[in-house]
Image (cartoon, rainbow, N blue to C red):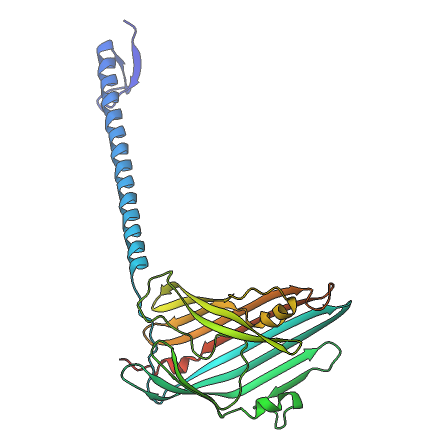
Length: 330
C-alpha cells in the first residue's frame, strides 16, 4: 500500500514524521469532515445571530420612528407679566429691474432690536404685550444715487428718508392681546405699519395637539394698487410641523396665493408678500426662538415686453439668550 508523509503532533516522535496507512488516512479525513462541520456550523450560527441582532435593531428603530411620528405636541405661548423678550432682526433686500434696456439695482440692509414687553398675563394663557423697536442701523443704495444710512445709537439727526423711522425708536408701536395659540384678540397700532409679508407680529399656533407633518393655515388678503385701482388678492400662510428635537419644534411657513393673478403688474407688487422659510419654537418655554424668511422671485413683462424684475431678500429674527432664562413655568 502506498504511504503518505504527514507531520506528527506527537512530541515523542524522533524526526516529527510517520507513515500514514489507509486506515489512518480515513480517520484523518473523518476528522477533517467533523472539524469542517463544526466550523461551518459556528459560522452559520454567528451569521444567524448577526442577522437576528440586525433585525432586532431595525425593529427597535421602526418602533422608535413610529412613536415619534405618532406623538402629539401641544404648541402654546407661555408668557409671564413683566417679561421682556428681545429679538435681533436683520432684513436684507436686493431689487433688480430692467425696463426698455435701462437697468437699475437697489440694495438695502437694516438691523434692529425688537422688544416685546409682557404687560399682562392671565391663567388661561392670554397675554397682552407691547411691541417697540429700541435701536436700528439702516443703509440703502440705488443705482446712480449716493448711499444713505442711519444708526439710531450714533446719529443725532437722521436723513430725510429715515425721519419717520427715528420717531418710532423706543416708543410702543403696537399693543396686542393674544390667546395662548397666538390668535389676536385685540390690537392697537400707535404707528401705521407696512405688511412686508413677514407673517405679522405673532406666529399662529394650532389649537389642538399635532403630530409631525401636521399643517394649519391662516387666511389673509392683500390689496394691490394698479392704475389707481385696488384689487384684493386672497392669500394664506401655510404652516407645517417638520420636526421636533430637544424640545424645539421646527415649523415651515409658505405663502400661497389663492386668487389667480394674470396681470404681471400686480405680480410685481405681490412678490414682496410671497415668503418661504422656517420658525423654531421652544415648546417648553412657549415662545419663538428664531424666524427665517426668504424671497427669490422673478417677474417678466411687468412694464412692457422687455421688462423684468428680480426680488431677493432675507428676514431673520433671533431671540437673545438672556431672555430665555426668565421663562416662567406653568
